[in-house]
Image 1: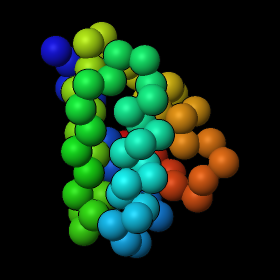
Image 2: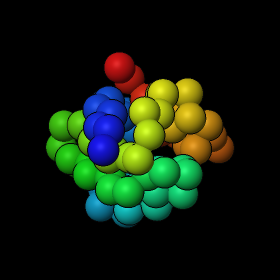
Image 3: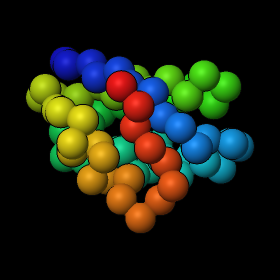
Image 4: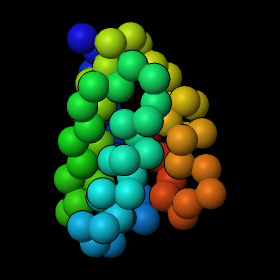
Length: 68
């Protein structure tokens, strides 16, 4: 299992967390997504090593931005 960690901006409520989590879980190979609303920290567990560009594409059309 591979873990990818990054920080998100734009999270303001539990609904934001749910929306982002659902989008990230649609990425092929993603098994688990954990998001901390207060810090914006995101941890994604996946079968393969996925780069941030894949996650950025999954969030296109939203106001959420990945910050390394």
